[in-house]
Length: 377
Image (cartoon, rainbow, N blue to C red; front, side, top):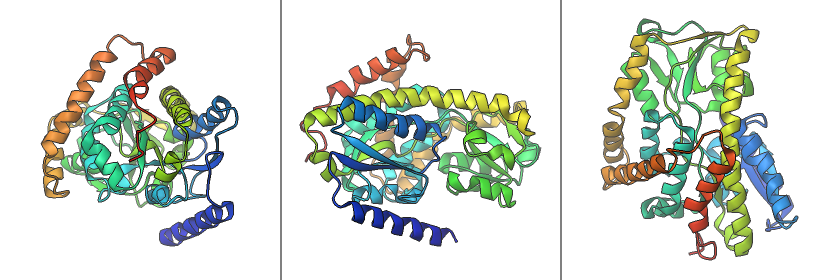
């Protein structure tokens, strides 16, 4: 059934792309597979598209496709490369063979909890690190900007707050690091798309799902999972919030590229505030939907803290054994250097100060990019 749905979505995408003809800078397709209510979609794409049109005086008019109307989740990388869309979101852990370096760095996310540090550091790394740039070029896309989530929680069909209660539970996890933690506490990790969490919980194929708290509301998980545990399983990052089809990017004037970068920087910060606000609202509203919200036991909480200390070594092992990277430790060390830089830059910035966050993101990353040459070779 899933295969049939993906074929249908791909067929729809080809009809749309074919019927519209060759996309131009005036009118182009952008796609993200989350629902409209999701902050990465609402703030990151729908509101951002309006900002692009306004900033360009109508010269740039993104046509936003959400859900799987244009492309199924895992095809947002290949669909971008093939020109079905000109800008897409992509979860990198869905295509690990294509993005090995990205997947190694994604394993470190379990050890981070600061949304803006995660977003700014991953964006900086992907835009400026030669190894990461080579990976994106190898995949036929031009990287634009990153994203992260608030800390992951557990949404379960029964109460899960202790080591004893989580043992044997089938838990949807987003990637290798989270899956390794699940195994360490005796749970059974299940690697499926976040778009399949609802059905998995509803049909009993999953006992729990791990994602940011906003998904109780934006994906209606509170209808099928009546027990939420406020454990902090780190943030999630992988892939990108924005990347460009190379031919589309090369066809833009430098000033148009600057507009895209400037509006993306603003959208990334607004998305973060929306993400965290919606997560807080979902937790507050959960009891009205019959959901009981718990705190994890001390032992369950400690299991995450203990595991985060070995996340780095596991990421190195993954890079060597699975992805056959020549120097995964060097890759991780370069990212840690970038993250340390951003920890210092953000040290005195109020995370609620939208203007200050946008200013430092532009000053330290986007303003330094030569839009006349970036992504054109």
